[in-house]
Amino acid sequence: MLKRRDFICRVTGFITAMPFFSGNAYVQTYDIDRSKERLNPGIQRVRDGLKYARSTKKNNIPPLLREEILDNPDAVFIIKTNVISQKDQGGKFPPEYEQFGRTGYDTAGKIFRKGTEKGGTTYIKPNFVGGFNADARSVNSGITTHPSFVAGFCEALKEMGNTTIVVGANGGAKHENFVESGVSEIMHQCGVCFTEGKYSSWNDYRKDEITWIDYPEGIVMRKIPFFKLTKEPDTTFINMAKDRIHNLGITTLTIKNLQGIMPVGYMHICNGWTTQIDKGFVKNVFNPNFQREIERQFIQHTQMNYKYFDLYGFAQEYFDAGGWDAFKVGDFKPDSRIFWFEQWAQRIMDIASNIRPHINLVEGIVGIDGAGKLHLNNFITISRSMTACDSVASWLMGHDPRELYYTRIAHERGLGENNIEQITLYEIKERGIEKIKDYRNLPRAAMGVNIYNIDNKLRFF
Image (cartoon, rainbow, N blue to C red; front, side):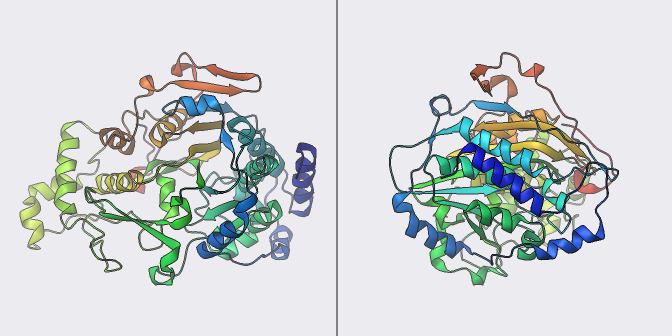
């Protein structure tokens, strides 16, 4: 089992083997070529993670959350990190493997303590959605959870006896992206089971890889498919998101990160309202009346003065043309983005209503805004409540969670508090935990969003 000094040596050793980028140098062709030498440990699928967990969990010791977090499930705990970095001439940060590895290691130690019982599996879902490539700086692009942060986090858990750890990836990245960027090698050297859940199609999944949850009251989805390991009763599910801006999700944090624990065919929930969602994969998955229900919810939220809710008038054109009556007979074809915010938010809340991670956190060290600008924010938010965690992270990113579509709808649906004034805040420091008396004194970034990516104008909620 690694001690702290050994872990730091391991991280430092890995850095020397990787292409080095100084703070003000562009990536060189030589460095890109060296990416071809990186280790390719092969693809491990969802089924491989299940097999690994079942074969090793007998001697695993699940970590325990510190008492303050357990006793305050609706509170948010903030860690102020101290990564020091400088952008190069292209506006990119260097990889900073060591700093992120140390921070991940320290963060796990501040959240967990060693457990007392054996068995079970820890499943970590970082936001490894995409953006990885041969440029080593891509691991620190603000788009994904930094892989060295994940590795450091895992090393700390392993020191506590938590030796059965599955790290799950799912999203736009392909296996070759994980290899050429060094992510696969980092996970391999860390000694965790790194699974890639993105299959070519829904039909490639085996039945025993998926757990279906019935949810008859769902506004969009009446059945929810999850990767089986995330729903096992002895799994410690850690939802590890990133501080990133998205033109639909607005702030894409722990709630949106749930898309990554669902199979292809159901994980991409950005479908348009005019799209026929149910493609026949599994019967009765979607509410047959979801379009009318989304329309009803949209009207209600418009009356509640949701900010920027019909910014470009797509809904107004629809209603002026006759609304549902004209649409259902084909007399009017609305813009594909009509009711887009409403539909995505309601669908992700159907999903969030059916899973409760053991802990949620946002690795908010480097984030990216709607113009592609990187921000060194240096925060971690931690909570047992996804809504509260995302609300506070959104505040730190420069947005008011009382105005965000998805946090407002989450609160409406009983999934947590989005009013920053009603969320109890604590700061985890080296010497202990202190209550934050006034959220308005927290440092905030200015990470605007380009809604629909239409006019290149950044807006704030």
